[in-house]
Structure formats: C-alpha cells, structure tokens
Length: 175
Image (cartoon, rainbow, N blue to C red; front, side):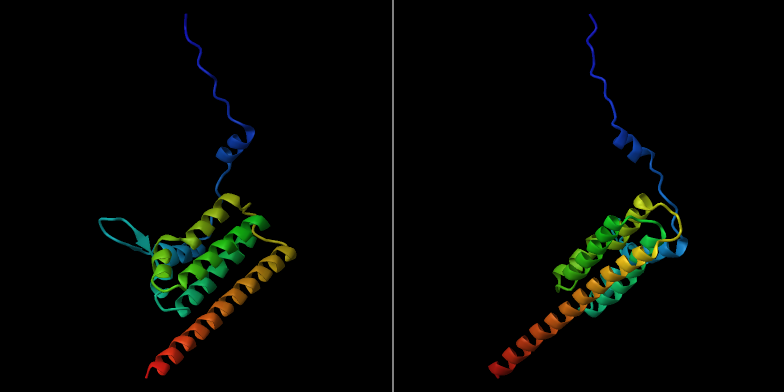
C-alpha cells in the first residue's frame, strides 16, 4: 500500500506576499542609498560600506549629516505610497543608525553593518504602492517624525558636549 504524504497548503497571506510585486524606484534615490550604505566593496571578503560609515567617523557631525540625507529617503516613502506604520519603521531605522552611530568605535562598527538606507529602500520597494504622491496628512506625519528625529539629534549633540565638558574639566583638575 502506498504511503500518503501530507498536502502542503499555502495560506492566502503567503500567496499574496509571494505575488506582491516590487515597485520601481527612481534612479537618483537608488544611487543615494547606494552611496550611503554600499558604495565601496572590500575585495576578497565582499563586504560593502558607504559614506555613512566613512563620514560617521567624525563624531556627531558625520552621523548628523548622513541622517539628514536619510530623511530624504524617508520623505520619498510618502511619494511612493508607503503606509504610515512602515514610515515609522523607516524612522526607527534612521534613529537607531544615528543613536548607535554617535558612540565612538562601537558606532563606527555598527555603521559598517547596519544599512538603514538600504533597509528603507527595501521597505519602499516592498510596501509602497508606487502611486507617485502622498496626502497632506502623510507629509505632515513624516514632518512630525523628522522633527522628533532632529530633536533626538540635537539632544545627543548637547549630551555629547556636556560629557566632553566634564572630561575637559576632569583633566584640568588633574593639573
């Protein structure tokens, strides 16, 4: 007697995910993401890094500059019809990249591996509708997110300056 094998069925959700087409992204946005995260390839190993890791070597300044470039990708998410929850995820990627990136040495290593801009481009490709325009509410939502991220940037710079002043005053007290 022949042994019966279980029938594998796929749920509608699984099939919908498989059928989901990735939307096409404008070349300039693709290039920005590549320059920030995957511009230079290390031979033999094949690892890639970009300006985010290089400019991030300059404490606070480098991470702030690259975060501002990342905001453009976040705003582009609205143009491509990305849902608000995904825009929050994209903002989280940028915020985490910045917060860990400002920590000396650890942040530089983190920037080498954490590709926030590439992740955000993948989110736009897979979650966007490609409609080409967002609503005023969407832009206000992203504007609020960017203001919160800028407050985070300013707060971390102020905290860094405070810590630096403590270190300098400690060194002065030694002499």
